[in-house]
Length: 481
Image 1 (cartoon, rainbow, N blue to C red):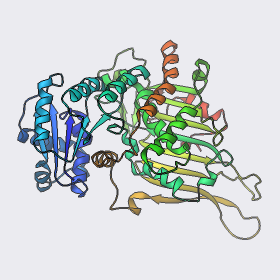
Image 2: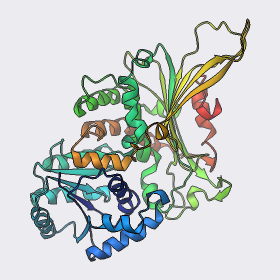
Image 3: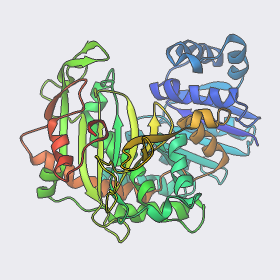
Image 4: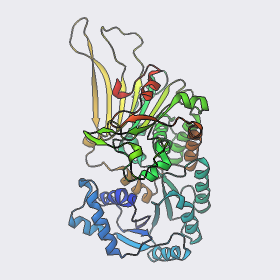
């Protein structure tokens, strides 16, 4: 299958930090379909060879395992092309169409790796130039809007040019192998699904923790914050995959219908519940991995009086028959004690303990990063004979070791799916808008709250109030258990 992949924002950070390494890995692994071209478009003037040299230099800044050697890059570079475009000029889109029509590839994927405020402009121009035929798909990188109204405006413009099946809203967390295995875990095995309900599960925790600060993205982050950057998309998508009902088929819309039902079932926030069930924080100077790091207000391009949150912890519930009364805890932040993303499913304690000593409830840990796998925590007898004591043990599945030749990164998987037209891991517009609808009361309450975010020391697990939030239900975060 021949394809043309056009990267708008072809010289930007997202392209060289994430997309090019992912495309190269797909090329290295032999998964990128033959007969493909990759066209980068941006504002400055340069030749194909100059762009290839630019990307070759940028590869020195990515993880060493993802860098090509000279021979690999020479072969990969044959796919790379460059075109100067002013995104507001119709003539430049006509020129792009001419470049694409000269070959008539089977599939055209237009990846908008630009600032989201440009999405309506680009999509309108693509439509005017006729770059929206049935062989064409457009990929929209998050964040899509900064609130419900702006997200709806973007979606209206996109829908006026592309059908829903052509518009692929990307969330790179959904491309992670462990996230893909959530559906397989639940719906491909008979073991867990009978237990996946309020009668057996005490609570579910989702943690997306980063040890890094905002780095060079201070101006972007100061306008965005952790709730918009991580909760509205990544964390809620994970929650829907954990909580959804079994879809009737593996069809993309069947899957996304069930995820939407979960989003509509989330307990809505009120001004009172925001104060009770949501904690926001902002990191101060501290020590991470043995090195001193500055506080958020001292980061480059951050406003000196910023009230932007770099940490969010919240409690919610899915109000349906399966999950009624089960608390879901979501937590994300920067400059935390470690880089890790996981989902912890805590099961209820045994109804009547017959063994002496303290028993622990079973739990399932779904590890997303840096490891990728599953841990099932059980109790086992330490010895033999009457009055034996129980001790905790775990069954550990490392996906990287179990499937060493089949592992692909999130962006690599999603780019390949976009080329192939597989929609399961892309977010539908109604999902995205419902997620905004749910978080917007929190944003509104914070805008009226003069207190601002709670400070926490870099290298910690966030404000003490986050531990108090979960302790109120007699629970504790995974690192405190």
